[in-house]
View 1 (cartoon, helix red, strand yellow):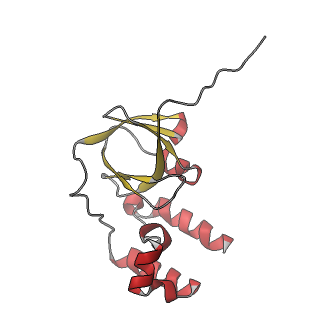
View 2 (cartoon, helix red, strand yellow; view 1 turned 180 degrees about the vertical axis):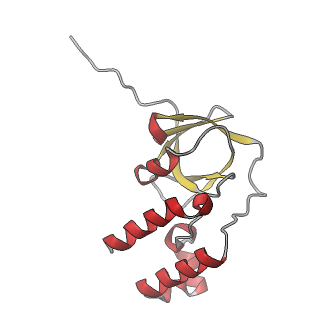
Amino acid sequence: MYFNKILIVFFAFILPANAVVVLDQMMSKDEQRITGVSKLNHHQKLALEEWLNKNFVYKPNLDQYPKDLYLSENINGGAQLRLSDATLYEVAPDDIAKASLWITPFPLRVISGDDPNYPQLIINLSSGSTVKVKKIDALPSTETNSP
């Protein structure tokens, strides 16, 4: 299992546009149940993901989301992202390495995700890659209390 996660991360960085389909991230549990994906065993699911990544490019439906939104600032090596509308997002720890590679500015979309701790996804429209985020009001304080 650990080796499979390493492979997924490895392929996420070497495949063109970082657009890797990982079914558990792309599909809700309900969508997996309705389509029958939930009935696949682990090896079958990996084989399907491999086939999809080899033959297709993931293209989310972005028509329902606001246009003309850009990454304005990449903060703390990808830990936080400020958008052109001045909103600020904290990136999920597992996605910081991916977000750290994002060079500003580029167009993006913010959509709802299914992670309760990081309930939105930011989609990099230049590469197709996504990161899980949560909206924050301000950057974490880096000040220390010294006497």
